[in-house]
Image 1 (tube, rainbow, N blue to C red):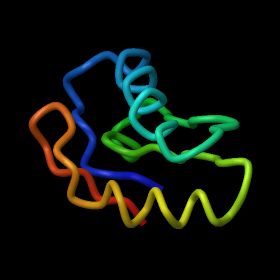
Image 2 (cartoon, rainbow, N blue to C red):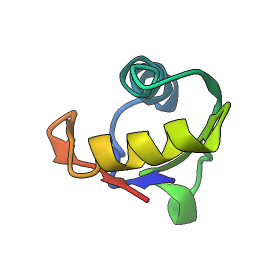
Image 3 (cartoon, rainbow, N blue to C red):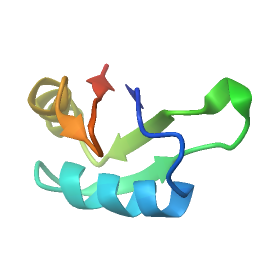
Length: 73
């Protein structure tokens, strides 16, 4: 789970950039982002294994992404 993502940038562009950034640590199966007020600035990144997901959470927490520090949980 990642939040504090930019809300004024097209969702498809954010997903592409998230994929490029987070795939550094391993294989990504899917990135889910939904439209709507309740879901703005959030994404779920699904990895092929748990260890890679944990590594990404540590590595990218507070990482600056489009001028905002993202929160990776």
